Length: 166
View 1 (cartoon, one colour):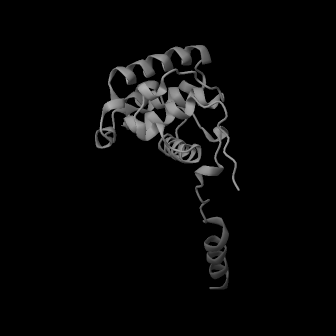
View 2: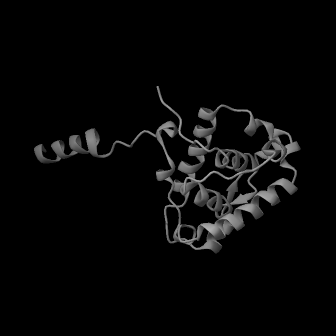
View 3: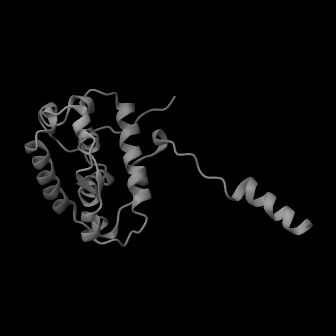
């Protein structure tokens, strides 16, 4: 019993403890992308991103009530296109942002936006642990809402994405 009792104590005390998720301490380095997105040229990503934003705008999410923005309509490849752009730490110039994304995503503090975006990134990383997943599989994975896309678009337009913790 002595050997197994000590092994049990080691596992319960240190090895099996999970790291606490803190979105305020996350940064773009924490974005993990599948190979099909990681290998995407940034210029090609910009073209895809522009098309996604145009589609978002044309669907009129800006005028919908919040309860209609919470249904999954976006797949993981579309979210990955935005995250691919964020991973390069680029700011996307988007005039008249308030005419594209809903006010709930527009009128929040930088800290709140950071937390929401990195919660999305954390869930994206958790959902797509297989970095060799194919584009076609990502396109079948519809789990992201227009509200989450709005937060990502807003965050993508920020020039200085760093929040200062106190």
